[in-house]
Amino acid sequence: MSQYQAPIKDILFVLDQLIGLDNITKLDGCEDINIDFVESVLTGAAEIATEVIAPTNVDGDRYGVSLKNGVVEVPPGYQEAYDKYIQGGWNGLGFKPEFGGQGLPSIIAIPVNEIVMAANFSWSHLALLSQAAIRAMEIHANDELKNLYLPKMVSGKFSGTMVLTESQAGSDLAALNTTAEPEEQHYKITGQKIFITWGDHELTDNIIHMVLARLPEAPEGVRGISLFLVPKYLVNADGSLGKRNSVEAVSLEHKLGIHGCATCVMNYDAAEGYLVGQPNQGLACMFTMMNDARIGVGNESVAIAERSYQQALTYAKDRIQGTTHDGGKRVSIIHHPDVRRMLLTMKSQIEAMRAIVYMTAVELDLSRRSVSESDRKLHRKRADLLTPVVKGWCSEISQELTSIGLQIHGGMGYIEETGAAQHFRDARITTIYEGTTGIQANDLVGRKILKDNGLALQTLLQDIELTISELDTGHSIITRIEDELSESIESVNSSLNYLMNHYRDDQHLAGSISYNFLMMLGTLIAGWMALKSAQAAAKKIQSNASDQAFYEAKITSAQFFTEQILPKVHAYGKSIRTSSTATMAMTEEQF
Ligand SMILES: Cc1cc2nc3c(=O)[nH]c(=O)nc-3n(C[C@H](O)[C@H](O)[C@H](O)COP(=O)(O)OP(=O)(O)OC[C@H]3O[C@@H](n4cnc5c(N)ncnc54)[C@H](O)[C@@H]3O)c2cc1C
Image 1 (cartoon, rainbow, N blue to C red):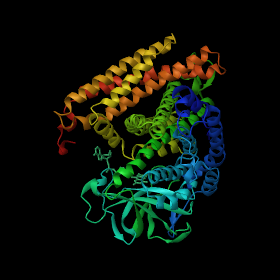
Image 2: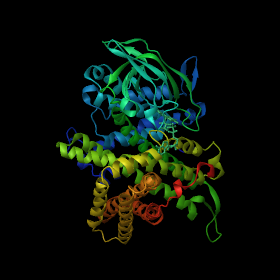
Image 3: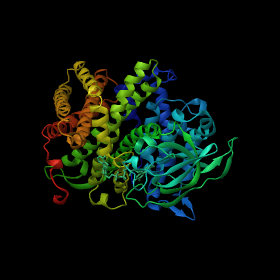
């Protein structure tokens, strides 16, 4: 079974050459950041990820989690890995120093998370959800709650959860029934929630549940939802732990993948909780968590695809099967063109996914740390547009790539021994939680495009055109990428025009084409990243930088993407523009 190697060189290439780390160093609190500093942080993360966390991955899948006498038991090595992770301060990397964080920007925290997620996908969900809870607290909680809970959440002594889903309320949170009754200075929270990631365990001293519930007399639907902090153990004013709150995991879900992650059915029986944010504004507060978590899911899609790729590559170099094309000597399967196609499909899209996630991380940092309000708004808008693409496109592509990773192993991929199947099973959740791909696509087309009259998207398309117009490499492959990308922009532009001109006449148009729109846009942005990557690599080659082979491979990877993946933009575009009424034409009985 292959060992995970953190792809530090690839990560640094994206940070330094593609998205411009210097955009960040001008920001408040980022003045001392440079590429050497980032490299040292990533090297530290790689050390703990490969030496401490990654070895728990296979056992995590095999032993899984169990609920015994009300206690969630975790796989071997989980506690030690978590203790080392928080001792190293990794949990608080991106949070405010006033609560014990290191105040680093997302553009450092997100690559670190990628490395940790690739090491053990299931285990890493504990930090992913905790970090989303911290973000919501930082922004929406009052000072009393922040001071009492945030230092321990940031250090990782307490973990956090995100508690939305009920059996009748999944994508449709308007249907949730959990109640919150006011009592003295707090509320009594009552209801049952399902599918709660790391809802219970003993890895941390306390678990802080961020729960959506309804106040008495709250308006119907999403306007009547509020957010509450509900601790597993009550916390005294001096920070010490008090009595156990009436919160418990009543069962664990049995799942296709992420066996090493506890997904709990949680019961809240008049549990003591505290309002976070304003009454009936819970969904807006929860969106702070969800947006972070959605980018986190895009990031973990990169991570699991990278892990799958590394394993497939090792296998392809080792497995001897067949001969050279002239029937000569027996060769390892990496010599066969179709295996190379599969490897390049993985490599080129992982590189593109990573670049899209990191580009969004920069937008997040600029939206939080820019000096002027107008700059913050501008970058917020770009981050908002990119978020459903990061979550939706990257998670969909991770299905394809982890499946290819398995395919490269042939039959050895389908049986469990090699571990290729685990990555495929683990990746399967990414298109479902934090809003399914259908919900991301609706968000992209409905909220981010139609509600905005397509303006944010047009600005993005102009930025891609600007990259093309500034090219000066004279490199034939790059010219080819440039031409293909220009044609793809035209395709997206005409699909956008079609949507804007017709959505009012056909109430089902937006919903019928939204998935294809999301995939089209993801593929286009990936092509943009491929162009930037090839351009940066060509400059490095021209300047005689060391490791020419690395940069040549970046150009080949971008070329492959342009030849074999980018043309999908036209297919998606055509399906959008010629979208007939077929989607809604059949009766339920005809299906
Ligand atoms: C392993 C796991 C971990 C999870 N962790 C958490 C967690 O920590 N906290 C938490 O609160 N929840 C969690 N969830 C729940 C998860 O967020 C939901 O499963 C997800 O949002 C989908 O809801 P649902 O399962 O009810 O599917 P449904 O909402 O029933 O959707 C079923 C299908 O219908 C489609 N659909 C539904 N509505 C629409 C619409 N309006 N337009 C177009 N298509 C639509 C969906 O895309 C989907 O394909 C987790 C789930 C799993 C499986």
